[in-house]
Image (cartoon, rainbow, N blue to C red; front, side):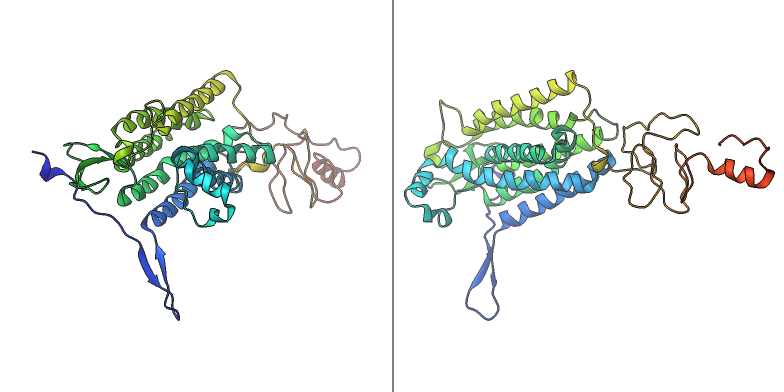
Amino acid sequence: MHALLFIPWFKAEAWEVPIPGTEHVLPIQPFGVLVAIGVLLGAKISEVWGKRNGISAGAVNDMVGHVVIGGFLGGYFLNAAFYHPDRIAQIIDDPSRLFSIYLGLSSFGGYVGAISGLLLWWARRRISPIAVGEAACFGFPFAWIFGRSGCFVTHDHPGAVTDFPLAVADYQVGYPPFEARHDLGLYEVFWALAISGLFVALSRKKRRRGFYMAALPISYAPIRFFLDYLRAQPEEGGDVRYAALTPGQWGSFALLAVGLFVLWWIATHEEPTLPASVRWPPEDGVGDGDEQPDTAAGEPADADATGDGEEPGDAHESGDGEEPGDAHESGEDEEPGGAEEEASTDAEGDDAPPRSPA
């Protein structure tokens, strides 16, 4: 009775773009196009979110680069390890086949690679992976909308036979006759849309650093675990099972553990801070959430910026004509806090009492 509500079968095929001056064509895969859009959108949203939370665009983009490269490498090679170990064996026997055998992409392999990329970034930069890495976690659901849309239009994740209204009719997997089946890629698009909206709503209020790094895996792992019960069986073209569970279900346990660990860490440790080099400074030059040094009026801060080429300390640098911050800065050959005394002495004589600094 739901037949009229089924999604009609379709499959986005590659676009063959002719290469001028040759007889060859360049196949453009719809899946690849959608994934590329997702990566670019997710990276941009991560950058914007980072700047709004006191993290420089350079730091966020540097981190995202490590995460994205690690994610694709992990997703590619671990897909073969999880789902097609025979392909790994073929490559071991003949390493030249590494470039002729497509190993596919695994979402959980991508998560392993992304986490590894983040840890590599932390080892190289020695900056809190929780404070900066959650920018990627905030942007991830927006990217996932397009990534899983790519899975849906190519029907990479066939589900079990069903009469559910959102099933895809005549799902061409296995052997005919073809029947209506769940499409797991479509269902994850719905999850990504919902979590993206939730993250936007939650972002209206400042959260403790690391909040989204905990929220992302905790919200995804249970959904993925139960969705995998809707997958087609291996003999129907579905995922392989290990002890009656798919690799994605086993991975959900690990991903949930990661989320709970991050949640425990941010609840039991002080909020991570950022070095001045990666803070995105508002007008006063201090990143969001970081307090300015508490200095008395007229006293220099921990480091005075008085000349060209000096590094800023807690006091703000200023060039010619800039206004002083908490600590008074002066031009050439003047000492902080002493400019007004000199002016007073010149105007009123040696016996005139100096005026107090403003």
